[in-house]
Length: 413
Image 1 (cartoon, helix red, strand yellow):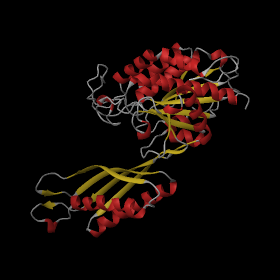
Image 2: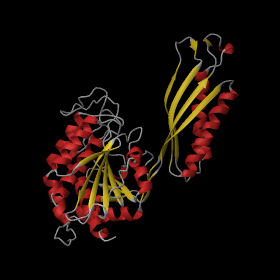
Image 3: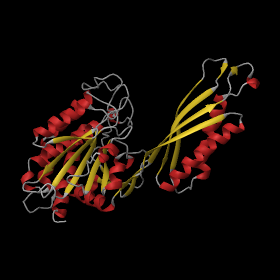
Image 4: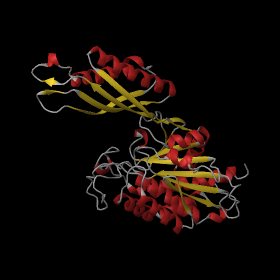
């Protein structure tokens, strides 16, 4: 835990201790947000909470597109000339009915923070609190970005289009994802890092199979769209097993099938929804193209028709090697090398942090929050998902210390 000393005498230990000291506040922020989950791009209550909290630190919040940002300038730093690093936190919840039974469970029917975004906001606020208390020594600017719609439909792009990376221009960006989503770093208090591709692309798939309805006793007079849809689902899996390069990674998943009226009626139409995921642009393009071809061809061979709509979603999130290596060094100084894991594989989930990383060098890291307790073993997007809150100060400390040290290195650049 011996931190490198800076020109103003600040050490990594100081920031870690300060974040530990406000752990109770970070937990309280997380629980307040957890109680009042909001989904999608419109998070009025959550964003007002963020605005009030940033203002209490002396950081002026501003609405940027559908989200909120606030910039902390070091004393005497000209806003237009200061080197700037951003800390990004996603803030939206999921349309899930919570089943945890926690005393701070969701008070909103059908909505729940089942992916840890409440913790992301709380950790970013913790970093803001600590950095605001030492603004006199900051060698530049830190921009805090709180975005909605990470789960869908994507809040990063509209915030970028609204200028969140400008004024002052962001030159590096960091973000975190808590939980057991990165399996090698799922244990509580483990930091997971990876240079290069961190998460997959995700394109949304809609298939409408059109047959001809009829009586269940006379299938020869109908075209059974449910049977056709079943063959389509099976055929799509051959894309991965027989058409995707074995050393590449791709996933085609059908998550929803709707069709039919009654047990004795042959359904005239089936609607299927799913996702297509890949780690590189070539595999992504191939899977999208062949998915459409297979759906149409299988349906045609069975006297049906398939309408296929593929809506482009998030690209792969690609971590910058320099920023990732820099953050890893900070994490090892703060917590020791035994607490830091180099992730051997990317994760096939997607993250719209990818849009920020397309424009600014940066990194998204994992913070394990699985304590071994049964209550923290549930996967993301599960109605009983929960985290070990005792490690939240670590996320705040890594955010804050990375910002301080990055600004020290880049103040004159």
